Image 1 (spheres, protein in one colour):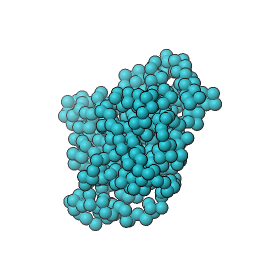
Image 2 (cartoon, protein in one colour):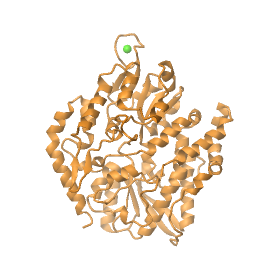
Image 3 (tube, rainbow, N blue to C red):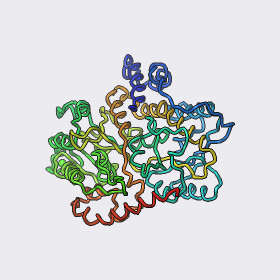
Image 4 (spheres, rainbow, N blue to C red):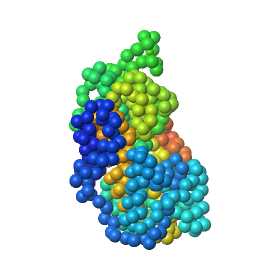
Length: 482
Ligand SMILES: [Ca+2]
């Protein structure tokens, strides 16, 4: 089953807005989103969760979360703001349907959250039913044997499109899954890495239609090199490639690099019959390194910026045809952009690769159930139904907010967003990153590309340590619950 609703929903908005002029479309934006969505897509109502009729007698369903992400789980009141109200309405619906009260315990920051989840479970105080935590910090807690395997939670149907299949598959080891992701975790969407392209520069440089390139499966690392290498203009005429010039690609050299392995269908670890195998020494992995290296450093059309943020200013100033960015920035900085931009997935390894894959920054939420939770049935029913409802109404509300104003005209970008959300994957070595301290397996591509270190010798140096750590991790995971 494809994850399609957001595109369908937004398409219905687009169609309803198509008759309006630009300024009207912008004015009508919020009300159109509020009123037309539900009525125009009958197909949508057919998709629903399989949770039966249940009455939890007014009990509390309590989420443990952090201040910065509490909007994923609950909001205090209806405010008229589209994303706030989508969460508010979802929870009203759930409270009514299951006769529960949705509640939260909120910690100020990540360290308090780590401490709270652990101490609450150890104290057996039943202070929460489901915890949400940063993916890169969750693995440590999982290894402390604090949580239940979601395969044992009733009503949870992990194959449904409101669960993030590729990530959950990657996190399943020994047929157990302790830290899944669903559309309840809206941060997996917001922290998604995507590519933006500048429509004006695409026109100026006569590039072919990039959506067609994606659709035809030709959006690859090699294609991106060929496309960007001819795009350069020494705008300030100083004879040097600097931040005043125009480029085919402007990129950071930090977290976005983490996405090229997953996008090329290259994991760092793979489960075998006997353990976890480290697979970053393969020919494919080495080739990915070489392709990204060439794209970054052997390309007149690329400008590499050491920090994360300052590339945004260059893109806003029409100095970059392409730029990788976290989707969440569309809600803020990118709203200032006057020239239209389009959204693209990360490139594939080659045309033979069947699918596009996209990844996220390692700060999104995963879901954790305490091993002493009182009511597994309530946890399963609520998380399943809330995840479905999030896919149906909360995700589209966030799309609408992200693509506000002039971008609501770009139905192609919405289609690309759906493709990206439908292809989220993530490396399990980041979930269990604390096991891979020597040579930091999870970030081997980032570390070698950003420092221009040779890949193979770097891998050879840490090869034995990686294998040893992977085997220890496997044994620790096997011992959980036994
Ligand atoms: Ca220059």
